[in-house]
Length: 120
Image (cartoon, rainbow, N blue to C red):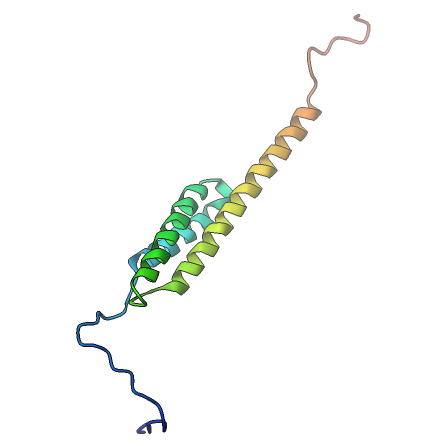
């Protein structure tokens, strides 16, 4: 089936020296690091890959803006950033839960020596 051109539509012509649009390699890396951060977030180890993912995402956005549209991969960046933030939230939740459990255990434990009932 042959498509018919739309009346009034101007065909977009690229200059022969324009580079081909290509996906940013940093966007894939941000996604991979965000995924690792989300998977290891509860073990508090997700903070490191999440931080690196967020820093790389900022660099990748600047490079994509400077490229004038020839670097793609914004969807991968968004997903990677979301996963990195999920990893940070999971790590923070794990730290808060561990702190609460530690405080409750400390409050339940006896302080000092436990002497017999008749000893002053």
